[in-house]
Image (cartoon, rainbow, N blue to C red; front, side, top):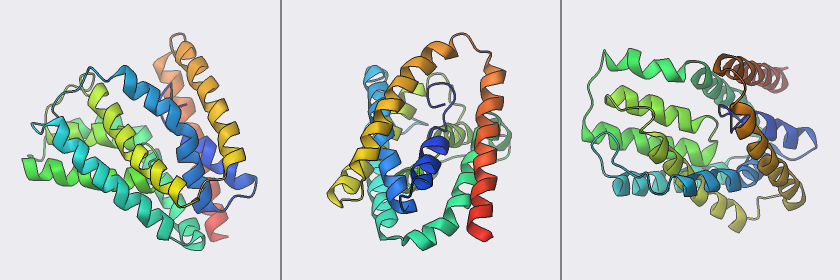
Length: 233
């Protein structure tokens, strides 16, 4: 899913919870397990760095790291019982972004104008979200940037990948230091994610984009409904 359209955490997080991990630890372990794939993508895009919405990549990187740190610490301080209640709403936000993210920016941009301060503020909030949960954060970044400017989506692939990786990097370090990672399950999941990323990239060359999006959004929607049932029954 990550290689094709994003949203891989809709599979990894429920899988870890299903085998008995507390929700906060499952979220931390899922982030660590998916990190190598994201880091590999960031390495591929390392020479495609450019400013975002008129703000230098260095500034955006600093803001994202600070936001990611705040989000990761906030997750570690959140009791699993509280996170269980928040989780379906976080999944719902991520599902909506998977479904509408590519079109949302163009619609909203026609009704709003941006400033440097608004770009930095939005990126800081996205960094917090990325460190705390991170589902579909890459799509959220693209939606925000296209809202705040007439950014070329294809040209934003490099900065998006680098900044998502930055938020995840600081979160992963926090989770490891806090001993919030269940390593046996995480390592198995990481191996599967690497194989899935490799196979998914090749599969993506053959599957129609529409089919990929329908399947991805359908999985995300089903998982969101299941977690609402789990939280409020």
